[in-house]
Image (cartoon, rainbow over all chains, first blue to last red; front, side, top):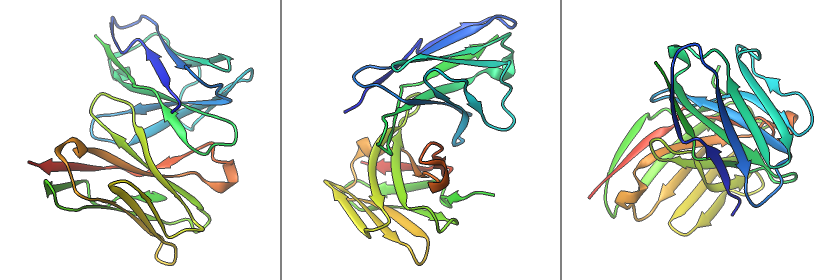
Amino acid sequence: GAVVSQHPSRVICKSGTSVKIECRSLDFQATTMFWYRQFPKQSLMLMATSNEGSKATYEQGVEKDKFLINHASLTLSTLTVTSAHPEDSSFYICSARIAGDETQYFGPGTRLLVL
Amino acid sequence: DQQVKQNSPSLSVQEGRISILNCDYTNSMFDYFLWYKKYPAEGPTFLISISSIKDKNEDGRFTVFLNKSAKHLSLHIVPSQPGDSAVYFCAAPPVETSYDKVIFGPGTSLSVIP
């Protein structure tokens, strides 16, 4: 099956720093990648949708200047949490979709802890 | 306004018995449904899907049933195993966005007791 990786799996940073999370589709080309955030004991919240070579589409309430998304190639999307604060601590998950396939394939997630 | 609902936040089942996870939706335009399984601190993994042209789809121990008139679907796991303990999300891609934005239910945490 399609494999999606994320790096790093866990990151701890100081408040005010920026953190970059990578999402890669390892064995397929992802026309669309998605970034989700999951709070403890809650469902997945879609943050943004990114298509290769174009600007990401952010969901309502998600600050695009805070969460920078770059989809540089068909196999790589990055999420940068800028000037991170403790309330940004969360579990961030990316997913990728192959053109013509309704299924999204999820990465293993990145645990971010901002001190 | 939740378009995909999972009204049971948790479920406990004895090993070997059947687990039934329920999901209700409000939008009659949904025509494709997915179930994902998620372990703590991991990304969701795709489990099984069903198209609205079917009322049942089976894959090994997992069967999904769809009742379009009731806007209800359910995931059956038989027999349940301890390794099935996880959070199960029901999801539906809205037709009008070409499956780009999958709407997830809140999830049901399944505990299979040995």
